[in-house]
Amino acid sequence: MSKTKQQKDLPGGIITDIGSTARNKTGSWRTFKPVVNLEKCAGCGICEKFCPEGCITIQKVEGYDKPKCAINYDYCKGCLICMEECPFKAINSVVEEK
Ligand code: SF4
Ligand code: SF4
Image (cartoon, rainbow, N blue to C red; front, side, top):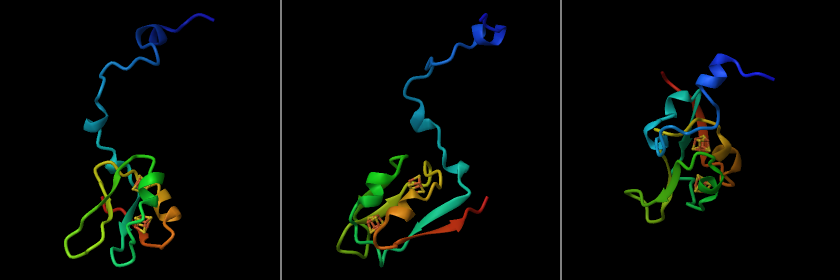
């Protein structure tokens, strides 16, 4: 099968701008926003392991002795996998305000 002009001009599978992911802040894609209830969060790190965007860290939070879940909303796409997987029901969702 012959290629269209567009296919010839724009071949697929080529990364032209290596290392650009960090610049592409995907948080604006969200419809729902996960919100952590720090009182319930046990800092177990399960959400961090499941987040497909790698935008959760478990870190020290002022006012708490144990580390807690922190979401980087610049990259969170709102898939809510973290909410589904949290065994302590410490993550809720709200509609994202645009
Ligand atoms: S899975 Fe739940 S309890 Fe565990 S760190 Fe994440 S939000 Fe906190
Ligand atoms: S909603 Fe999805 S992308 Fe956002 S922190 Fe949770 S698992 Fe990660």
